[in-house]
Image 1 (cartoon, rainbow, N blue to C red):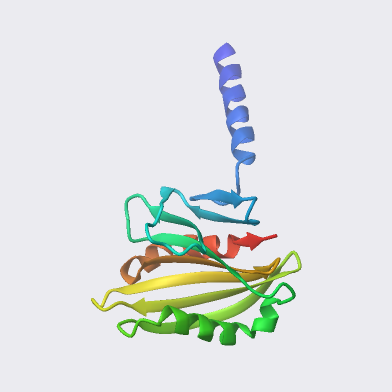
Image 2 (cartoon, rainbow, N blue to C red):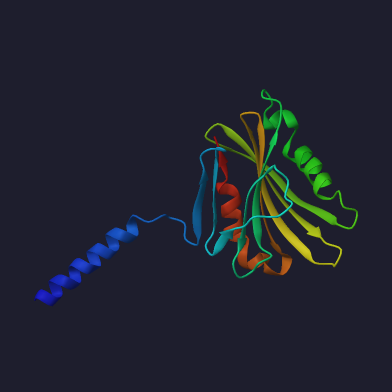
Length: 181
């Protein structure tokens, strides 16, 4: 009888603990209160320092095992009164974004999609695109951009095309989780 009571208590405790955990598995939360943004990133990723990175690079994470998988947040200044919509439609902003990404003539960028979404009265543009590098390696990227407090925030998460089908859902969750204050 005592064994049954202990078993029931353990089952109840396990159920209670698991019901209190986050609803999305496979990701962790990153919050930067001083810069005013947050996002979810895949489990097993670590922060890295990129030598020679632009001062606009706020944070970089990469997968501990698949070292070529990475994400970054870049923060750039825009006029204080400017909104994301003032910069253009998702397609227009995406086109300018890809021209900047494709500044290197040895890279070829294929624009896949652009969309707009609203969250807490904040507009976000989500872009999906591929970049073919000079060695014919194809990178698959998902980006989320937003404007807040006179700054343009760009979240980008990237993997090789051959790994895309394995990580697509997690990467899309990460990109859509990106929020600014």
